[in-house]
Image 1 (cartoon, helix red, strand yellow):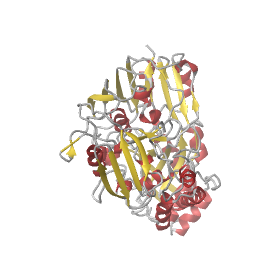
Image 2 (cartoon, rainbow, N blue to C red):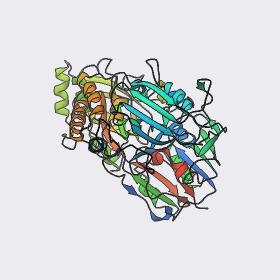
Image 3 (cartoon, rainbow, N blue to C red):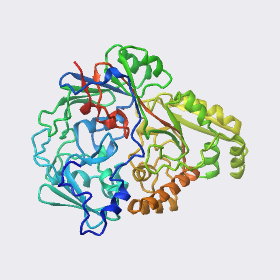
Image 4 (cartoon, rainbow, N blue to C red):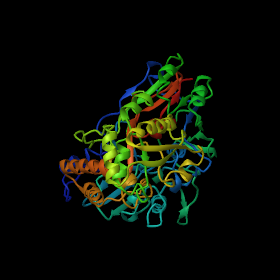
Length: 530
């Protein structure tokens, strides 16, 4: 926090003591450890250089992509949104949540009330000044029972959003939330320009870059915003994001100079790519994880014995070694990684056990099982190969797992949340509350396994409001155990963010690991050396 005006930790004369809140929030630090970074020396530079054109290739993008934040699903559009828009807060590379479009924020009498003061004089790309009205209109779209937003589970807990003049926004929550400022860092909750109570445009933001053009599933192009309120962002004159779903084509684009940075490098070929003297490999420990969610509202997945049999029928160590080449860690059927603050390191690691899987099938009244698992390599490199490998592992359990390779385009609309069992991945979320609420809570639009567990949902609300750090930890540890043993997702691996870049690309000393591409802030934080 830069200014003494930010009273986040000043709880004098309030119901919650400064010490108690810091114990609860860890000064709103969100990770258990700093992201671990491995990079060659060539990409380092003493200081950023202005100018040039930065080109980044990502695996994700679809012809169904939308600029409406309610419908943000692909990595491409989230990256785009983080480039042209600003949220009230952001997660810094060191893992702390800090004000962004907000100049400061503070709780009210307790963490069920939050007060945000906007930075003065910030303008959208069309010249309109950012005001409290823009914040209220932008965020209200995510509230209400009919909202289709991925952040609905959080925003329906907001009882009211009001203003005090043009610069102060007040939030009243139905339940206390220690992590609320972290939630408001989501790209989905970016602040858009409003007019007469409605959003004026989805493609106009107040970020370091303005959007020049966008072709869903193909590319987005940007121009540096000369009126950006920050002097330490937006170094390249122009930039673009390209969707190149095929791993080999993405790597060839980097080698031939068609792009400057690529994401989701195939772990099995990363060492070979690193032998190129003009290429650097960036390997960052993250909360990203791969998962196979099954719809627990449909048979046979509505039976937890069937779910357990499938969880016991994948050899996670073989997948980690074969598909990820060790660039990650074993998944344990819950989404909280060792990089998270409240990771349960005492929870027994699930292992491949076909005999135990057969026992669970028997408890479900089955002697064998035939199921189909849909997947596409547009999700991540090696996704389809993982399913094929999984099908071989499952045979020993008496399970015929049929790989169903589906088209790359339209996966998030046509397959995810639709097929009874499919592949998925999450970049992870900065806090346990965010990850559990968005992916596993009852009522969430992104509860991908349609899972319902009363005890889990009770603990989720209790932990969100708990100020005692030890009690919070105990709750999150129990929730990880419940998820591991009951939820409808096979979470088999946590994967590092592996990127590759040309040697003429400058990289900051710290790179965020909360999302890929430097927390989706790569275009505004990185630079071309010339």
